[in-house]
Image 1: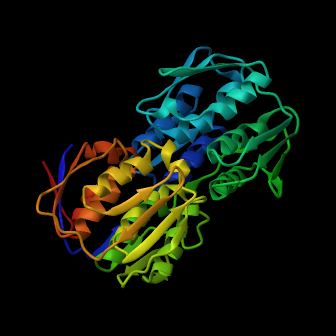
Image 2 (image 1 turned 30 degrees about the horizontal axis):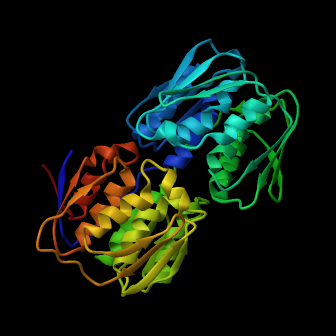
Image 3 (image 1 turned 45 degrees about the horizontal axis):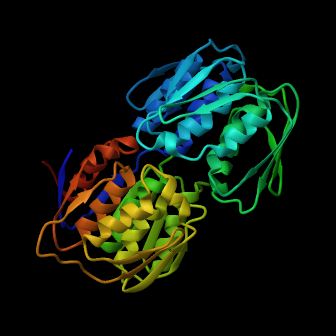
Length: 422
């Protein structure tokens, strides 16, 4: 898909799609529960479809409707042999579900596309090696076989919280107690908090003392109905757009959410935006924006759109603790640097940081062609940039948005953004 984005003044209300992070967790917990659960207010992106398909492969019965699904759980201890789980390009699906395949001593093969199977998996490799289980990773697949044992687990907290959540999903099912200690620095802890909240909804209790989780064995998931709240990482694109362009209201938001990406509200407020909140909606008003130092350690998904925000802040913004952006669908630091330079943005990067000296407007004497890098967040961030610039742009391979937000361009059009599918 190729799209042309033309600078536009936006206004109105947009209903933010459901949280992808919470949706993954609800579908997994429901699929492990005894009985039938109903998950409502779902957005069926490709990542969510990947988790649904993998849980079906494990034996869960999942019936989907327009924005909901009914799930009857499975038993991970009684898997069939030679199961194939197609994770598509979903890192959450893959890392959440590798431990789930290691309860039955059967062979499970995980497939993926794009850069998925290049992502670091050393934490699981080490655990499987120590327990003398099979963990074979190639450019085409990850194959596992073995039976995960209860005990003490200790893993690094600065690679991905998805490894922590993956273990928390299954350790309560083992036949005796376990502990899980996270080594400092413990980054993206808010995502683990989302997991703990969802586990509690489904009857799983985990105690915590500092960076150690105490997990009682022989627990059982209990069916539970869940309505998924709006996604703050997706809301961030509209929040920045409003801050740079014109007032927008974002609905379908939980103002008491524990999503780490809710940090976008504080970041926008610190930059000078005026924000009004009531019931389930948030209205962001534009203002003169001021640069700040932004720490991404607990909200890495905000990285690309915050680079857009920084580009329009007069003076210098520094974004720190950004290295995990390099291990996403693309190397997001390299990708955003490459594409912003096409707009003549003054951007410099290191392995772990991004420095941008912004200015009020961007005018080019030609229409730049932007590469998506096959990354949904790069597409959405560069769409917001072009809507706020003074020159149109072309975004190639824009179909990457279907990974998380299939209706993104339609929602942009609904608030007055000029998007033309070429």
